[in-house]
Image (cartoon, rainbow, N blue to C red):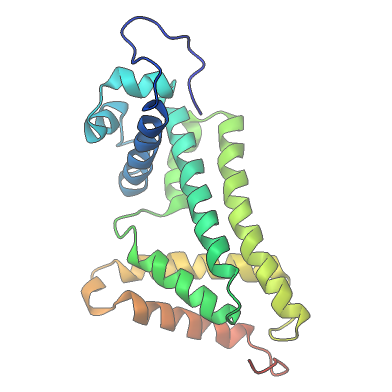
Length: 213
């Protein structure tokens, strides 16, 4: 969310670099917030990591709260785009989810739990900012839910509410992510964690009447 402030002397002039600078700030901010939490990350820290001035960050984002909101929405949109690409594959859903799981486990090793970061930030956010992030999160759940609904229609998994499947999968993914990047991360590679997660999850989802792929 860009600041609505008018440009004044001392602020960077508008040019072709504006969008890339704004995006770079969001990318760095998202990484920092997810790794350290809302309270520990300051605008100063983001500016230094981006090698820009604090004034430059405020030029694009009016406050830490707006920077956090925009960075989280950007992050979620990136995840949604990547997930759509993977889920559009003709491969069995289990294989597609397994790939998503591997990618998730291989990235963001220092990331904190998303809900923990959100809960920490909520007191500083407006209702509109919270809604913007929750809407992005909801889109992610809906995309996964749609795929489970298709599997149910084909008789391949038990006929439970698709959103229940989606929430269960995401919850397990978060739990396994924490395990994969815990004390024994070097002893439990992402490929094995992904396989363990899908074996565990599919043992409950697979129906005796499921169609053989």
